[in-house]
Amino acid sequence: MTFAESAGGGRSMPSPESAPKSRPRSWAPLLAVCTGYFMVILDVTVINVAVPVIGRELSASLTGIQWITDGYTLVFAGLLLTGGALGDRLGNRRVFCSGVAVFTVSSAACALAPNAPFLVAARLVEGLGAALIVPGSLALLQQAYPAPATRSRAFGLWGSMAGVAASAGPLLGGLLASTVGWRWVFLINLPVGTACLVLTLRHVARSPRHAARRLDWPAQCAVVAAVALLTAALNEAGRRGWSAPAVLAGVGLAGLAAAAFAVRERLARSPALPLSLLRSRTMIGGAVIGLLFNFGFYGMVFTASLEFQHQRGFSALGTGPALFPAVAMTMFASVLSGRLSRRTGDRPLVISGMLVAALGLVGWASSGAHPAYPVLVAPMMAAGFGTSFALTGSTATVMGAAPPAYSGAASALFNTTRQVGSATGVALGGSLLATATHYDTGLRTSMAIGALAYLTAAGLAWLCVPAKPKGT
Image (cartoon, rainbow, N blue to C red):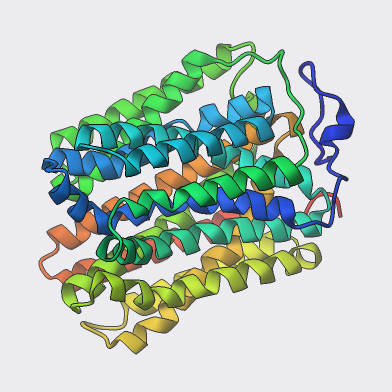
């Protein structure tokens, strides 16, 4: 299968501008795309440390503080599939750039917010910009790097940005909030967003448009409802408990919305995700693997952060360096897996990565009560290495299983499942810590469940991930 986006399914722009052979060996497109992706993921976590200061200065209620944090995530996760569909229809570069512009402008609005309701509204718009950026990012990398080996390295570096940004967020947020003020948490996005936009317009080729394809709005609304309800329920589960009526109702309604989406896709003339993709073992298996390793990794990062601050007395600024072993391995693992993928295929990389990550969390779970920090360094390194090592192959698997005309939708599906995995891991970890008789018991139980998720992902990879990458 060719990885250049075809014009099938509708009217497209002239091919010379979109041909992936333009600057095939330049890493400028990767820099542009990763800059936007880093900015999006950073804003998921950078707010956590700064939000108490924001709440005090803007006299925000507890509900307002929660919406400042969660509103962005809800809109981001809920509109990912819509962003992917728009990218396929209007051109991924155009939608990506629009998302960067929306994100940058709304970040400025957040920084200038005079009160909490204004900040919440600006954060919701920021989430919209993020949902337009992320699906197009993978599609643009697939377009820019058609050679399997180069593409795998690009996907690996793209994926490592998530771990680096998520872990750097609390450190950067605490540093800015305690020095120049919380508004700089958002102002820092302005030069980054501007640089991303300039790099993209200059170095990323235009993408084909499939203007004849209609957007299936009933299906899009069903996806938004399902993801938003599930994410909200999982966020509340960490605070209210898994048996709370609001949590159970949210999960039930999310299931109904997902069922409505499946029914609609069977009936739609132009489905958001063709049934052939939904029936593809490779596509769905790769997406579920993404859900599972995000569940394990972000659950580990969240519970470790609470452990370091609440039980060991680390400051918010000290927690960032404490988590650095997990983050440091992501860049190394992504580069290594990208280089190995052409020789080994994706399946061995995903399986070995998941087994290494599982071994790391098993090591933490079995380390006993109150282990010394040096004992935890190796488990964190193993989890970070294994997750990033497997991400390259799973990303290539999902993107390789999709027809070129649906690359944006495939990217959106993969990132949506990963967001759900992150939210589930954080919610379950918080719930276990809150309800366990002893804090240490809840922590070790969370690590053991994360290890089980990694092992399940390894089994799925054996069944679903192709042994050799396509195009070799």
